[in-house]
Length: 68
Image 1 (cartoon, rainbow, N blue to C red):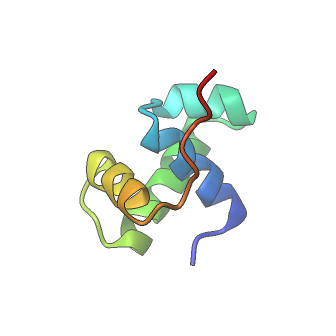
Image 2: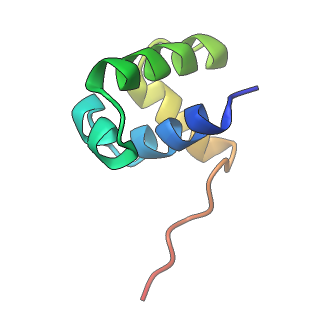
């Protein structure tokens, strides 16, 4: 189980945001964003951000962005 903050971070990882961009968007430090990403990778048993993003999409953890 991911925390709600980790889910927020994973959502941003899944759309390709860097740690710095995640930090800016969530009003946290880049180091804190990095720690969250590391925790997410460990909890999901994946080795990288791309794999985490792919797993999030495959498991449909986040609804697709609405198109206008």
